[in-house]
Image (cartoon, rainbow, N blue to C red; front, side):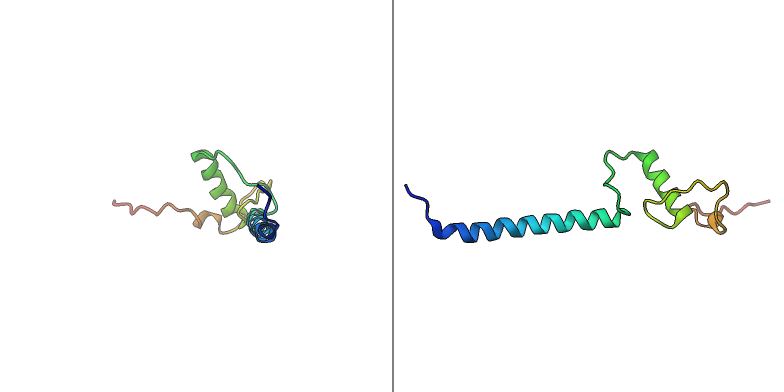
Length: 86
């Protein structure tokens, strides 16, 4: 059975649109991650360190080697203060 050549153009358009969409999604995720590849197999420790790094640098994938935390770091914790009853 011969190949119907009229179907190749729509098929190429569909394949191109899926490719463009996939490349756009991949590029968007790459840019949102601070131009770094996506992290895989994250556990509780990794998530905790990512939240800490975000509070330290105000960037999702940022890290710092400063020996002291920036001003205001002590009040950015998720934990609520407990009222002490004396």
